[in-house]
Length: 137
Image (cartoon, rainbow, N blue to C red; front, side, top):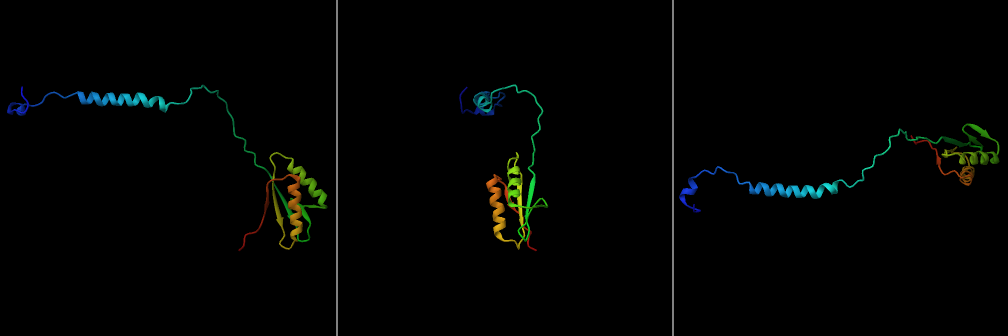
């Protein structure tokens, strides 16, 4: 049987050449053998079963208002002296989690009174201090 003769071109090829198919399958097998250990890199550990709920403790909010005459109000309760304010602030700073302190100053109050309240809160150890304002219309 000679290549390139007239007789060969008339014959119908009735066999499939399996060599390229086997080569492709071997290459795929080698690729999978290499990649499977890389994909599974975790250590198998049988973990114990337990039910737990995340603790969602929200700190309370303390409102410290400064009236136009310089009087302090702790959650709408009048505070008679600066020493009483410091005592209340220390008590709140000792809580875990610490509450948020919202300072509401009247627009007519002297800035000095608001600064004193802020300084007393900082000295007591409160870390979350905010100012409350009304939005402009």
